[in-house]
Image 1 (cartoon, rainbow, N blue to C red):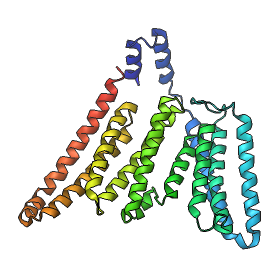
Image 2: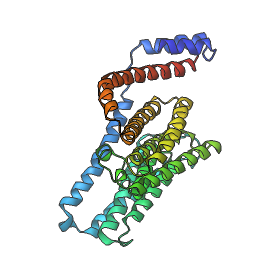
Image 3: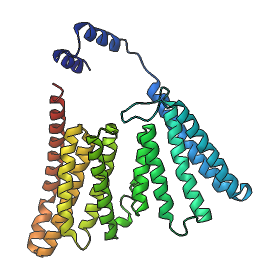
Length: 327
């Protein structure tokens, strides 16, 4: 912390008096409960929405579908009412509520809106057998909520719902066992959606629309496009997807330096490494060289050890470059 304060002082962004005041403040060792309380608020929202789901599941016969939907709708309307009332108005900039509690009301309204649409479709089949339509509507509600109320959590929910509407799930539990690996059409759909998200992020930056959403959209596009590219490498037209993976990796590699996001940098390298190994395995399998395979097994420990060393060096290089940019 002292080093960062000194750098700001050397760049004449802080006066000597301000530098001393900041150092004196941090020397007091004051502990703030704000982040802990906000985390508990976030946890309470998740527990509440989970409790609503359990309540519906256990009392569905005694309460009735219409009553449950009316209760959900009433809570959603109430949340949006208070949020609209306290919001100063739509803006393209990163302007928040005066009280952070309303951010969690927005999150609650978003989650319950998605629950409402899913329950309505499941019980009454308002869109026939097209469950994807209700998911798509939920995605638009979440994204619209995110942009109007300036809520990144709602944006994440909306982007996830968009991917789900085309049949792709991006959760830790389904990362390995996912239909995208066995259905090549889903790989193409995922790449198109990822490209659309990137184009929208670029356009948003150009018109100065919610620039702080850039990290969320780039992160989501990174996972979506990389997973779909890797899935394509294990299917029939694998030679096409290697070029897609190379191009997307280069873009996200450059983007990680631009927004100074080490998470994007790490995952871009990780996905590229996985894709490279799959590509290498397929090439070796096509060449059908049994003698070379025996030699390759001998080199495997050195290969993985060298990969780990290079990976650590790459992260150190990234941190050095981003820290140098502050000077």
